[in-house]
Length: 481
Image (cartoon, rainbow, N blue to C red; front, side, top):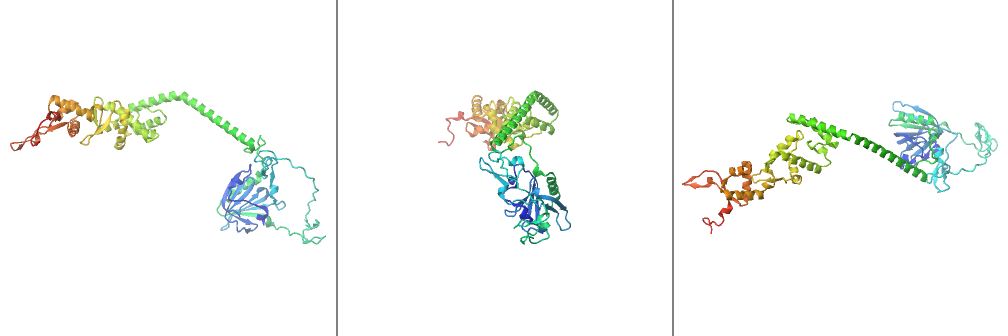
């Protein structure tokens, strides 16, 4: 009976924050709560969620079993901690003299400007202002006062209004049957906490009832609430602009302070990098702490020229490859000084020695090579010889340039061995052998291999000599038609 008499149904499909008044605040929630209507369980309200706000107590379960109860109707509370299988309970004693009105019109008013129906359950300052246009509510004309009969302990007859004694069941004057007085449990609701949380929610509920939070008004200089009508919108825009301007001023102030310290930071970073470089020069490998410090300096935009590039310094892998190619180009200036061609394994080893502990794996090294021609002057490219050896070379040691130079050298000086060619080109014999083999495959030189010659039934040994094919143009060999 208390549920039907004191509560109002709500739509549980709407979130509870959307059901709050303009100045109503939601404090706490607890799931797994059952409801007792008087001393008996309300069968359709046994597994819901309780929400406590500054104005009301909400119970949400499903669309048909959810309700709201005004905190102003609660006159007393009792707490039961539970025992054995009995759940903790909070008993709410409701005001039996002033039950809530069932008239929806009494809970709202219509704006005389825009026709918006406004709820009047919030505080006084908010309930006087239209939520759509922001216009204050017109004052209602005063109604003529009617004399209030003095309070008595009897019941008024619904037919003749005669005050009868509480002990009578019918009117003493007209004999009309009098209404049966409500039992104490008709103004009592219990909350049963099946999943705990009773103490926390009860403490919040007691605080709201003690301070009468529903009567507390928000003190606002502007009579219009924030967000109400055009004035509220303008106030929100102005507040946002002021906040943005304040943030911009703070940011510019921090930027000015950073600019003042920028020179000191760069000087400190350079000094730190010089110390790390000197420490690395004395040791065979750079310690991990030094690499971490160099990486941190790079992330702060204070990267030094001789600091190794790592992936965590870059935004993406493509930029990392470009920076590695630039770093490799600087290393090649030292490794290839006075040399036009070098084996790939020698370059990889020299580069990793220069990087310290930030080593480059072979797979990454091979990915960097295609980017090398764009960052080197003169252009340095990679080349794979017939023997399988991969080399880096400058333009004079490209296949076309070396072929032309070798043919001219052999034409002018006669046949030469691989050692002679290596000495002339100032390269190793292994490199010379691989490069000459590539020229031989093009048919520009031919070999004179004494080990293939047979004289008097015996193989003649000797060293291979190279001849230019141009010398044999016009010759007719045995068996040639």
